[in-house]
Amino acid sequence: MSSKRKSIIQITTFLIAGFFILYGMVRGEVSVVLNKAVNICFECIGLG
Image (spheres, rainbow, N blue to C red):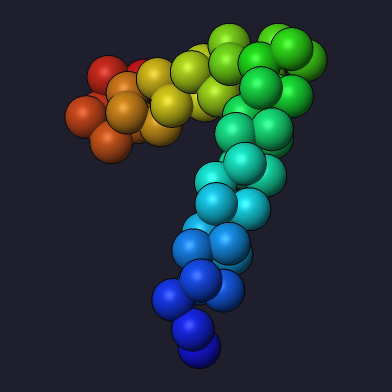
């Protein structure tokens, strides 16, 4: 694979990932993910 093609694929993947992150933030998914992460951590520690 040529270096130019690899760079284009990397940039495109980065832009798509950024789009999905922004889309999730607009939908309010940040609080959902944070809530799930906290619950999982409490279960691992044994506090929940």
